[in-house]
Amino acid sequence: MEAPVRPDALTEPGWRRARGKPALEEVFGSIRTRSGGTLWQKLLAFLGPGYLVAVGYMDPGNWATSLAGGSKFGYTLLTVALLSNLMAILLQALCARLGIGAGRDLAQACRDAFPRWVSWPLWLLAEIAICATDLAEVIGTAIGLNLLFGIPLEIGVLITALDVFVVLWLQNLGFRWVEAFIVTLMGVIALCFGVQIAMADPDWGAVIRGFAPTVEIVRNPDMLYLALGILGATVMPHNLYLHSGIVQTRHVGESLPERREAITLATLDSTIALMFALLINASILILAAATFHKTGQFDVAELDQAHSFLAPLLGSAIAPTLFGIALLCCGLNSTVTATLSGQIVMEGFLDIKLPGWLRRLITRGIAIVPAAIVTILYGEKGSAQLLILSQVVLSLQLPFAIVPLVMFTADRRKLGELTAPRWVTALAVLTALVVIALNVKLLVDFVRG
Image 1 (cartoon, rainbow, N blue to C red):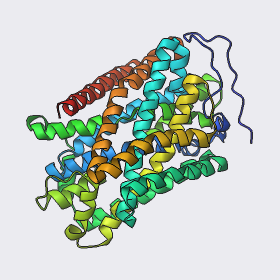
Image 2: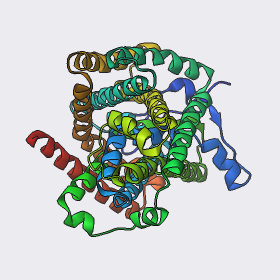
Image 3: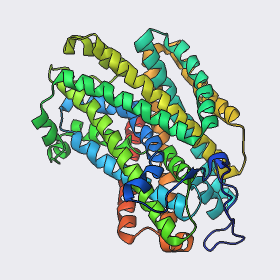
Image 4: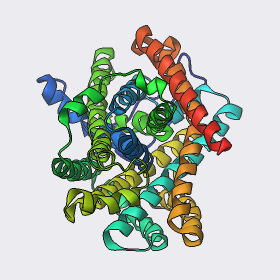
């Protein structure tokens, strides 16, 4: 089935440039939606993009902060995981609104709204952030291969380059296959943690109380620092570009009511998916609390540490294996979304299209070179430091993605009747300020050592 042709206006109010060809043109509008039927029947056609976005909220950086929080403070920081997830839901809802309401992804919107002396630096920063994201996934996948099969980290880093063929194969089958692959691996991750938590037998009363806000987080400096880490590592800049692009794989009508309904359905999709991501992140924290914190091991933060400690604590050799499988699935999932993000950013900002395999190899090559050098020279400790550095790079780029997103969705000249309600914009501004402030603090802490 051929993708529908999107009509491009010669002039559009509020934009410096008219819309060009969409990013991911080969799958633009390729998935049919329903104009009638029940809400559930309509929603089924929209389910998918949100799960690709949710992958970014379960990267190795999130794993590390959740492990550290659970091992040191038990279930207390579950409330922070919940708060950060709510903030992410709000920002991703704005991405869906931009993609459907303006017919542009965030990269295209920046290109069409700003002069080149602004949009080109934004493009460069976005590319650096995507490479940093890919670097984290390379290291996470390599650690997963090492934990499961004993493959040396430097060899595992090189093996991750082969995933380009998986991505290309899935894209050739159709975008629904990409979404099915992501959802399947997320299901495996959830199953692995479900079994481990059942074995750990946590205090469910304490788990429920952990989701309730407490002033103890503010009073305890160490707890506050870890809470800031969980919040600061949640929102990833590449997810904002990704969601605003892949939401356009749905064939949506041009009328105002049709687009308004599409925004609602796309927001429901991302909200459901991000609640699933919360389930995974909370599971990591609960597992750490029920095993490490319970037995007095308060300083577990490394992925390989957690893997080696699980067997003696849970009394089963299968527990660390399940942990390794979940980590490997997380890494594979993230590589798919990093590829799509890179394609959306390059095509959106520069209107330059490269073959998928070439784009993938460029992005992965930039990530593999430093990862391979560091793992060969410094081993596991160096990889952990490189992982932290990648999160710092993401923190630096975050304001340059969030601020334009909030600006565009609040501008009636750009979105017309589909502009975000004022209360949503107010919450988004507050969320943006909080996330940016936390990331700046984490950056300052990193510089101070």
